[in-house]
Length: 110
Image (cartoon, rainbow, N blue to C red; front, top):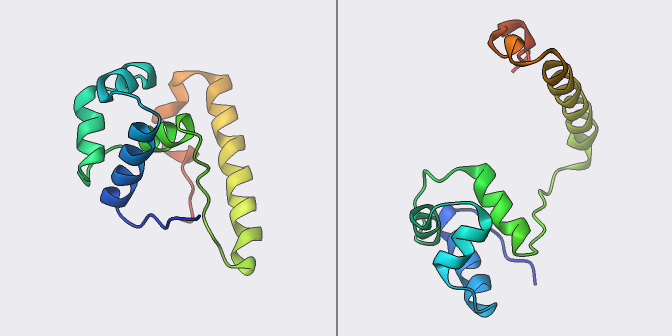
């Protein structure tokens, strides 16, 4: 069943449900996921300021595939922007950390 997630609280409750169903204690899951117990507690209680990257990583560890539904006419533009962003990241990684402060590497039309 697809469960829409439109708030941190909904994501947190979903994560708590899956964690408990798997019989994993919160401190054990936090340790294996590389986050603090406080972060996981905040997420499961719907704290709106949790870090998105960590939430996505936790969902992936629980075997949850996260998708975004987009209108077909937006998909091509999304793919072009994603490819450009990945190329910029690859170039920055190849140059090392010195280019991270270069403002010209930002997406100019955003």
